[in-house]
Structure formats: structure tokens, C-alpha cells
Length: 291
Image (cartoon, rainbow, N blue to C red; front, side, top):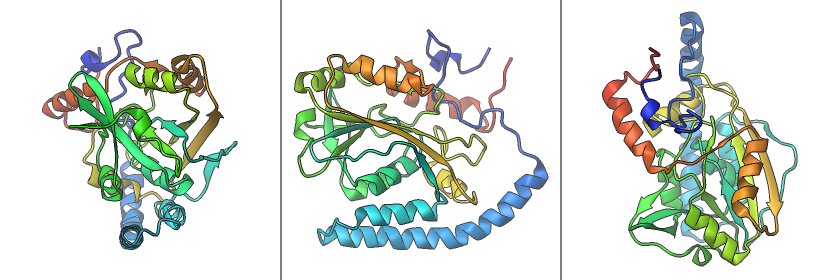
């Protein structure tokens, strides 16, 4: 039995928080070659990324946001995402809500390049959920965090959706390993249902499940980002669709993700925090041992 069974979904046995590279092994020779070549790539990529981030901050401080998408695309290219598979790309419009799964820091950069939306996140306010718009600095900070949900005061969902730009919400509240997808909070679905809100749904998946995968659920965010930069190239697959309205948004979202092979798991994102506390107390952080 898997020693992290207590944090898996009781109905499916799926654990969305274990590392994506679980039980993956790599030969010492390939690892050595990867480290040598990867070290050279890091020396090139990190300075370029720092320049692009600094440029992004300066332009946004000057209220020049028209170049956000271009800078986002350059950041993706610098990280090794040369070709992103998106068979039916859609156009995100102002006033639309974008819902997406979340498994990698690259997700933030992808959406910056895709439509430069207003980034929003959950805020726990007692037993209720509110929402908070993120500043550019908060978005950049979240590149190195595996949890997006915050605590404090927030707004209702309709108060973070503006007509000038679309609004992005990673509905899982944390990064998961793509064995499935956390179900959107029931309160969020209720609010969308009341508004009859048009939504764009995205499924972002990363084929690489090696120790250098872009997917992160347990590692230090900064160290993980450095590791993914050691790959010569990285792959991202995007599936997206626009919906004007729906009589049942919960069913709509569930069907969309399950059609892409990602089962909806009915757990709360706070399980991730409990899992991480246990994971780092009991594991070396490399592999999960099976009894």
C-alpha cells in the first residue's frame, strides 16, 4: 500500500500531490550528461530571464502593458518552450473568465504570453471563498510557489471580472501532478451559475514526467525552476474551448477535463498543505516506496 494513501482520493485512490516523477529512474551517464549540458543552458537562460522580468516590471510600472504578451512569449522561448501544441487556439476577450488547471510555474508565463489577463486567486474568508486580483509582483512571486490560494479579505467573483481584459483563475488552488484535476470549489460554480458567465476552459499538460519535469507539487519553487531550465527543450500541450453559457457549469467543466483524460477529484486544495507537511517529515523527497 502506498504510504501516502491517507491523502489520496478515497473513491479513486488518486493522489494529486505526489511528485510527477515518482519511481522514475535515470541512468548515471545520462544524468551526468544532462547536468553538464544543463549547466551551460542555465548560464545563458537565467540572465536572459532576469532581463525580461526586469523589463516587464519597468514597463508595467510605466503603465505600458501592450508588450506583456511579447515578453511572455520570449520568456517561454527562453525556458525551452519552442513549440507549444495547441490544435484549436481561442481568443480570450475582455469580460471573460478563464478557468485552467495548474501544475507548473510555466502556467503563469503561458497565460501572460497568451492574453496577459488579470490574474486572480482564491482568498479564504472564514468558511467562504472570495477572490483577489494579483499584482505583477505577486504573479512573479507565484512562479516559485506551489500554492495559489491566499488568506485575508477579498472580493466577490463578479468584482474581479472586468471588460478591459479577461480574468484568469487557476481553480484548483494549488499545483497538482496531472493524475487528475481538483474539482472547482462549489461556491465558485454557484457564482458562475448565477452570473451566466461566459468562460474559456484550458487544459495544460506537460508530457515530460522525468525528474526534470515542469510539473511541481513538492519541490522548492526556485530549485524546481532551475531544474526545468536544464532541459534543452520543454513540451506543453494546450486544449482550450470557449463557452458562452451553460445550465450546469460543474458538469461542463468535469466533462471537458475528463475528455482529456483528467478525472475530477473531489478534494479541497488544503489537503496539499497537510500532504506536504507529512511528505517532508517521512520522505527523502526522491521516491515513494511501496510496501
